Amino acid sequence: MLKLYDFLPSGNGYKVRLLLTQLGIPFERVEINILKGESRTPEFLKKNSNGRIPVLQLESGDFLAESNAILFYFSEDTEFLPADKLLRARVLQWLFFEQYSHEPNIATPRFWITELGKADEYREAIEQKRQAGYAALGVMEQHLTQQKFFVGDRYSIADIGLFAYTHVADEGGFDLSRFPAIQAWIERVKAQPNYIPITQQF
Image (tube, rainbow, N blue to C red):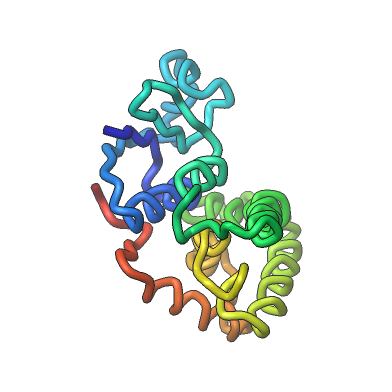
């Protein structure tokens, strides 16, 4: 069976849990408490030298890191990744956007506020991140006013990648009421078959 090394509050880990569940692929989840340094132990670093979760141990024994790489691996030849060459590239375009422009600015304040409880200590940095985070949400909002989903007007791993941290952005102090198209998209994602919340235990 697949083994997922994960931290339950992590949106990056949630992406993988959500896709595997929606594909009906069983897996064992192993909790790695990053707040206690468990992703920096010598044992874990043998699995991922970058010391980050999620890491997926395949049935072959190989380890695969980086959440969006894992999404791409499992979505091949499924409805979650288009067959068309241009549409596949657009999926990657949004996944790169998520990791470069979205996740660093939306996930990080959530981590500082919700997981570390250091909103006051990181106040200035949070404000800087929030400006860039709102800019990323603005890009998404504009796109979603024209389409129901991010690529090809159908649910794909581009949506999973962006949904993970967007739907809990309020935990980082973001006001999603300013983005009606994003709010409607969030509800469409939640309505997909075999949807699970980020807090679901395995």
